[in-house]
Length: 476
Image 1 (cartoon, rainbow, N blue to C red):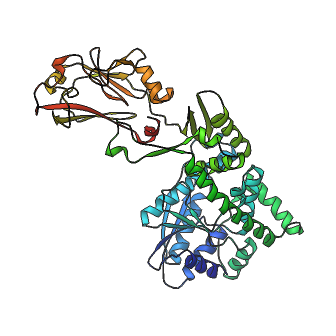
Image 2 (image 1 turned 90 degrees about the vertical axis):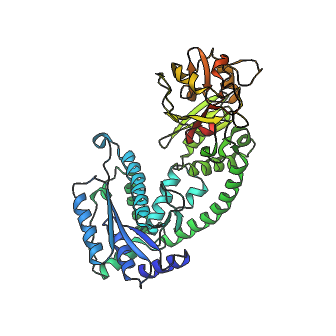
Image 3 (image 1 turned 180 degrees about the vertical axis):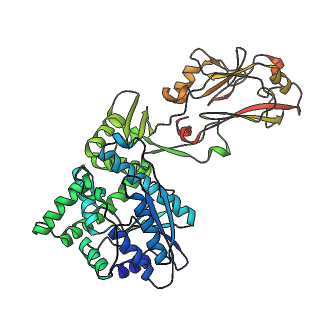
């Protein structure tokens, strides 16, 4: 049965005979069944066995050696990664579960890319599906969560284009165990699977008792999950449409160029407010999924809506799944955290660029003319003579961005631009003495000293240009 299920899954998913697939193997019974089922298939796709050693158990190195030996015995290539959890002694079980899950997927994705695989296979089965849905139900998930795991899904914590296949989702744990025993397979038992401090182990114990007593029927539960999946598909389509309607597509600012990439999208608070409550919740879940976040509990989602959508304050932040989500005025997006500018005195000696935490400041050389109007181009000889000072903007700084224009305060321009206060200390200002030459993200400032400007057409001039770090561009 596992061999047929694997063959059918690969056929339905259009996996070609020339494909390379990464097979996740923990050394446990279920992943051993998957590995032996893959080895029993007729010649076709190349299977590479991958093991992630979490460093959480005394016998972890023995399990690694076991998996390597089993793969070699079946003639399959083998890869592995070792993880070292930070702060292990004081880590709580729930945090340890989340850490292991995230970094296991990251390690598998890394190995998949290493061997040229676009598909990762795991041995999740029907009982795992039931446990996942029950855990999500207790956390207050929506219909999308109650749809459980899919046989084919994007790989979590991985680049786009990497897929996860679960060929055993319709096979019970008991059926896999029977096949493993009939084939005389060997496997390792993880003692942590009996530790009831872990949420999944507690849920597994309770569900197994209900299934054994006849209170629940696995086929009936799977059929119910299938109905939720159909409803979830419809809800997902609606959520994607709502998410598109609530996205702000912001063109790069004048400080950006070809390096700034295409338009960035953030959420509009005003657009979210127009949605009915149920659709707004699903649009937010859809958005969080796109950010690589775990689905929030009902309580966390309610807090996110309260702070991000309903709160009257101009700025709000919410922490979720290791990220800080920021709303400033109408925009909602993950909050970038570049370091503040550290003041720097220097002289320019022809360098092409200056790196700062939030991006790069370029010193472009152009002949004065169409590409570099004389009002903006700095004379290279003058610039070399100046003692330059790179620092943060100040509220009292006056910016003159166009010839003949009135000067404006740096603080007012930041407010007009909609730059969150939390980012302003990371945006560089370049000075020559007391004169402002450049202020990110606005661009060059008109130098008052006429000697600073190139006087002759077609003579080379220095034009300052700012390219922001990718994660802050949507806020500028």
